Length: 140
Image (cartoon, rainbow, N blue to C red; front, side, top):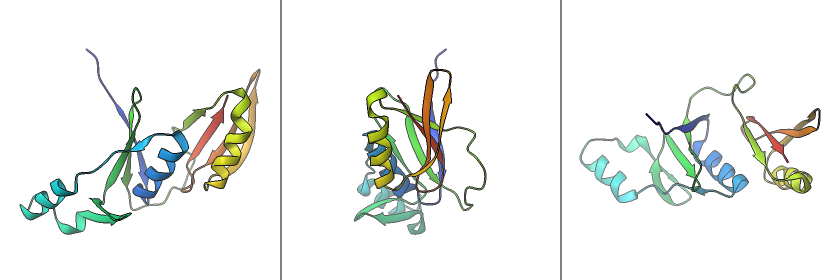
């Protein structure tokens, strides 16, 4: 038996996080059908307070996903509490040996924060945090 999966990330602002990570990875934010959302609200299957207007579009407040062909879907979901400890899971953004420094600069300009450089044998990486403080690594 084969199973699919998605990665779910807790976020204080899932829509901003989805935009940031879609840009960082070169993916796309999964569209949400405003007509479907309005229909669910009008039929009583959802409430107005479960929606949000973000970037001029009606969306579900609780979450939004990003996607790219051939990769697992990543869902950013609203949670009330702030991040308080180190991630148990993180992304390794693989950019190729010659592109690490340029990618660190690009992501820093987009709101990431440099944390530290690491190396184990011939493998090296740069640990950074996204705008909500989630750790990730830029690797070759």
